[in-house]
Image: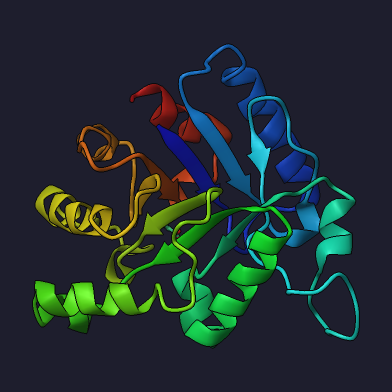
Length: 229
Ligand code: PEP
């Protein structure tokens, strides 16, 4: 299983450092899972042998006049080669269009990054039926090279993110099955994953891992999630 922790705009540089040393220590001999942590950009640090550090976002440039952004040069300093692209909070709150997301995707593929590419539909689309859901999700692959070898896809229904209301086991199973007929890469589920639902979610055949926000913020609790699979 793949476990990815998305801190979003949480944690400081020092709390991230102690989080990573705690988590690395806890999972040190457990090689059965792959673990990623995405801290805020100010708290980037080098990966450890069992925890890969990735960046939540970056600009598609080496460096330059892009106020407020970080580029390849800044990521290189920490040896970062993993990035989240297309998270719904960046699409919805920061206004990243599919065109920008696709450009970013292309830039980071050209630079050999591992990409966790996020897709997910809003509630009104989910409520208008499964065909609409799949049409919406398929559009989020426009401009994306789904055959990129270093790709992981994360399906995260927007209505399940940070709401405490995860998608049901049936909804996840059916959606992941349909997505697996489009992409043949590891497929994560994200959206209110926690200790009470991880067992059931991780036992779905088409779920290769999880992307976790709130329930990842405490290293010991995140490890509990990992250990329970
Ligand atoms: C996320 O933002 O990627 C996420 C899944 O958040 P949460 O686990 O808090 O729903």
